[in-house]
Image 1 (tube, helix red, strand yellow):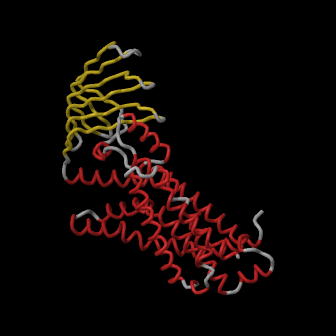
Image 2: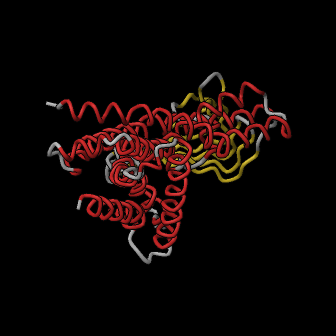
Image 3: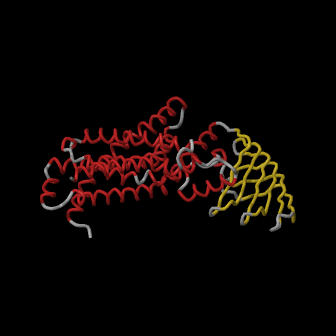
Length: 360
């Protein structure tokens, strides 16, 4: 059961956390999203309603970085307030150690970490896919796009289901289309069509042949067709986008995608780093809770502006460290796991040391 002390400290954390979310959302959304969209509206003539939709779709990918920053600010400001009003001294005089006071802070950090993880797994992939599709569809509608050698693998439950290839694609029409269908890892069907058109939310294949294969891979039967509807989940926008980006996939989808790329002989180091980042970034909330609370014991940091400034400096150092760790991972000096988790480990170590010194 949560004790009165725990509820009191958690309540102290919530107000500055909400303030931090609002403040950092304004700062980061303006620098990472809004400026680019305003430029697109003014210089490239993007419709305002499209820009507004893109802003909403891009915002979740920024929020996963905002939650750790807000947690750091909340820990600094709340403990600075408690320290300034001598409540920390009163707690310790009453026999409550600083380590005991850290329990609700770390629990809150852990709770925000799981919230961020759920956000990263559920909201961010859907929003990123919607943003990319809307951007591509807008370009297609404004001027037909031409692309050569369109290639798209499709997975189902971690296994290869279909490989889709088109020699050329212009707008909603493809030429020289080949589809390979797989069943339990074995090639079961091959479709070769002269052209395919996306019409009324369906693909219409024209002038083609379907080759059916037996379980041992031998030719079994063929079916010629002049026109045929074939169910494929990819829209023209999906095919123009090509392979999904890491932010457009959840953890399990990205892991399956990495396995597929390995089978194709591709270098997957960057993807493995991105996979580990999907876990390390959310748990930065817990790490910053550990670091922020002992830093806030200095009463002079009670001011929101001072706490915000200190948070920005720490976050800057954290992401510089992340940049160097990721660079080392890309050069395969360290493993992808260490590349993603080194900033958290270093920050947690510093936070633990400051907490230990403050507790003496």
